[in-house]
Each structure stands twice: as C-alpha cells, then as structure tokens.
Image: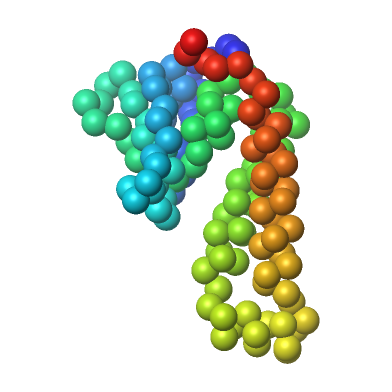
Length: 132
C-alpha cells in the first residue's frame, strides 16, 4: 500500500490530518470506546494521539492512493455508518410511531445497513498485516 503524501485524511467530526504525518493507528476497545471514539491516531507532530470517530481501516484507506470511484464508495460507506448510528439512537416510542404512521421500519433498516457494513469490513480482512 502506497501512502499518498500531502493528502488530507478525514478523522471524523471535522478533524483532518495530513496522510504523511500519521505514523500510527490504534483501535479503541473496551469501555473507552463510544460515540466519536473509535481510533487513536498517532502523528509525527503531537505527543498525544488524536481521538478519531472513524475506524482504523477507513482512515488507512484514505491515506493510500485511490481513484475517484473509491472516494465515492468511501463516502457511501461513511454515510451508511452515520445513518446506522443515527437510526440506532431512535427511541422505541418513535420507532413505533414511524412504523405505524409512515410504514418505516427502523429495525429492518438498521439490520440491512449492518449487513452491508459487515460485508464491507469482511472484504478488508483479506489484506496482509501492515506492520509484520
């Protein structure tokens, strides 16, 4: 994988960093992980890591050279993830109202989005380890 120097990488929630200044990525696991806390991004210029709301694989994909179609696919994946996060936060009362009044099944859409995101994440697992 070739890291394209000078590319601005989106870390989530309005945070961007230069691809050639990112030196490490570490997924946040356990109780420290939550909304807006998916990955610690280590940079060449800061002592402490930046907390990113995107996964390490998504950030790594953005750091590498990609064509226009891959950027559009990445944007679609990000939108699906954001939509899934928003739908999971819909309270049960509102879910019932949406199902009754608008025939919008929040549970069905979250299940479908999870299936799409799972397929995408499994496709990335076939890559060799970056730092072996």
